Amino acid sequence: MKNTTLKSVSAYIEEGIKKSYTYQGYKDLVSSLLADGKSTGHEQSEALANYSMLNDRRMKRWDKTLKINESVSNVFSNADLDITWVVLSEGWCGDAAHVLPVLNKLAGLNKGIDLKIVLRDDNEELMNNFLTNGGKSIPKLIIYDNKKQEVVNSWGPRPSVATQMVNDYKEKHGGLDPQFKEDLQLWYNKDKGATIAEDLLKLL
Image (spheres, rainbow, N blue to C red):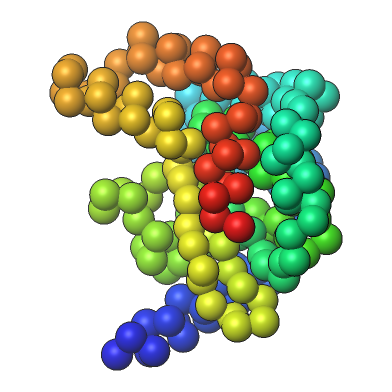
């Protein structure tokens, strides 16, 4: 039964890769949809379009300012890899806007890492295999071994420190409110991708 499950997951990943986007292609898609007041995803609303607009700006800002720690950079650059990073995402997702630029920088350090972004709503079967506490939380990174054609790990939807912040706040307040979401954005800005890089370093 286990082998059947692995084969089906691999099949969904291969299907997702066929209709995936490069990082630049994903950004171009988000920008082009915004020109028509739309976001990626099956649901459309003014709020989602506004989130996408904010995220478009965030990604552009991170692309210009983001720097990877030298020690982390060295390990990534010298690792012997043949993997695909398949990331489930949507343009309206705030966490994705902070995470994707870091993944792009890290992937750019090693020719053995191929970054592919797939849209969550267009890849429901794949998403259903990588739920977080039963939910379709994104971004979700799937680390796929190209030679073995199997999943070796997954990560997301948030870096470890941010995940702990979310869990602690939910436990104390019963849910996430606008104030927490603002605090989380400030944390991302101060952290500058360091926790994401450290998390993924452990998964190499």
